[in-house]
Amino acid sequence: MAIEDVDDQGQDKPKASKALGFQPSLKGRALRLLSQREHSRHELERKLAAHEQEPGELAKALNELQARDFINDERAIESVVHRKSAKWGVARVKMELTAKGLAGEAVTQALAELRDTELSRAQEIWRKKFGGPPADPNERNRQVRFLITRGFAAEVVRRVVQGCDDL
Image 1 (cartoon, rainbow, N blue to C red):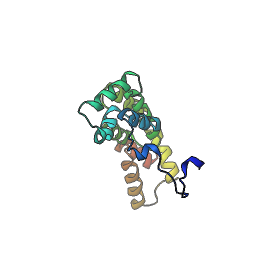
Image 2 (image 1 turned 135 degrees about the horizontal axis):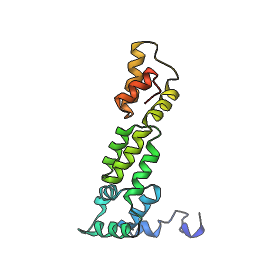
Image 3 (image 1 turned 180 degrees about the horizontal axis):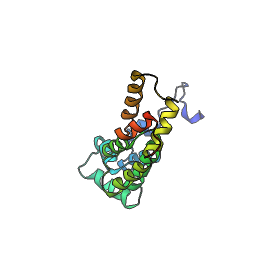
Image 4 (image 1 turned 60 degrees about the vertical axis):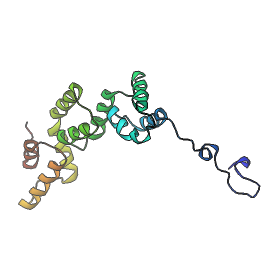
């Protein structure tokens, strides 16, 4: 702590920004969120709507950020697919993309690419979690439920649990 941050009685002085009630602008808030990870425009609108003081202010700030390519839905799609595909199936990834307000041809293409690798991803997740075939019907049901809740297609789950390696 610097000497300037302490008053005559040894108490901490309030920071000037807090003392004056400083609040970051909508653009500043959006940039802070974007610095942590990619966000879709829809996500930013939802998160920042409560901080909008004048109608249209949020749209203007997001339009400016989108024009400068700080907000890019294709990057947001790639980010979600990259982060989630190692643990989730196509259905869960699609649900995540939809929740973020992402749709269109880029989403369709990304999901099609994930479908091509769904069996191998499901097998890898299954191997890490269980390591071997089920010993009884209860264990089989547990393995099936695990993969289904991860968003893998029923046919893929059936093949993985039964040990079929061909697609």
